[in-house]
Image (cartoon, rainbow, N blue to C red; front, side, top):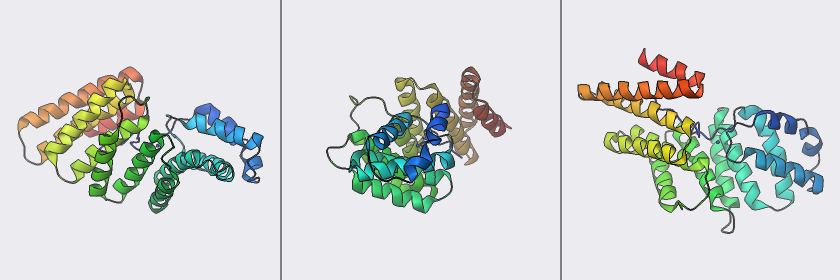
Length: 259
């Protein structure tokens, strides 16, 4: 029912790597055969790491071998902080390709790799991707507890991270699936407020879609006509925004919902 973008987001957390990833992908065979973490291998792994940061993975099956190779380099180099974040991204790729049990296992491995001296945003990324996998498994209470704890610990002075939207969105989806209508409605409003605060238009569009969906769900449950009106209002706002940013996929989804 509800959109998860963001999402490593949808949220899932998806990464948009683009042409840079295609260029990096061509280098995989050489490094996949060589576990030694020499200068060339580390430079390559670092370029993968930089390319993925705060981006959306648009092709998980293609990205996974790249991350596998980068992980080998960081494990040999004993850089567990970067290895932990690579494993977080790998968890997303497993979940996005239907291997949810592997997604959970890899996210838990990332948690074990995380150390107190690692960047806290690495931990937040792991929590998003673990919660993504738990949503797929119907572990809604676990998702609620994990995301709420993460949001309580979020430091507003941290630099921008797509993990923030992922935590807000997964929390809202969990509450909806736990049939907490009032809690889910407020949580989706929190998603929208955060998207606007961060200035990420695509996240704002997803939040508007989800608010339209939850009001529609409340109307189906026998609530008032006002819920239908609110659903239509948010859906139309989402359509206007999707048109403005050229989100064809979002437009198709929205029109199918309104049909």
